[in-house]
Length: 182
Image 1 (spheres, rainbow, N blue to C red):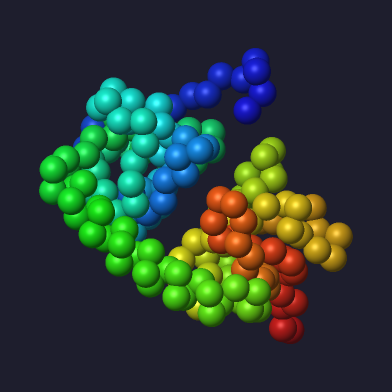
Image 2: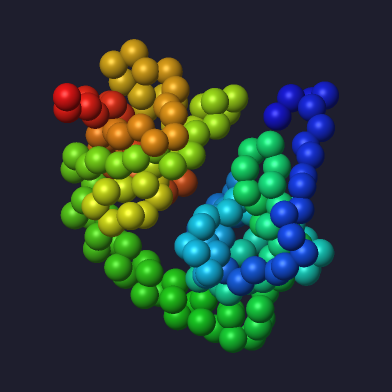
């Protein structure tokens, strides 16, 4: 966002939603919450949790939040942990299980060719997310990974890519558009 741009929010309803923290990148101060009612992913920034005394969230935490619509899409605001004691204990157990599964899965799948559909793309910042056809999980994709003269992607486009490990986690690399069959 540019310096002189004002970020505007529109609260969709006053209803609070329940979700699970899918991913939170502590070093970047943001992550994603999956809403339990419909599986939708919402962006969450650390500003939305600081009022609780926390600086970050852990994967697997159950949270309650308001949904707002910004110029970047759906975001979670006023995020609160549903049951702090249970959530922290469950999160630690889930994280151990997740890490074991993720490590074994990742080691066998790195650099394999996959396909997916672009779920989200931010033209200004040059990144987005692809929903993997293999398992339905979202994967980060950056403009620097685009090949064949591609400069940006559009929501709904089908792509082919490889998975690489970066310092921030797995991401799509060597990204090509899939040719539409006619």
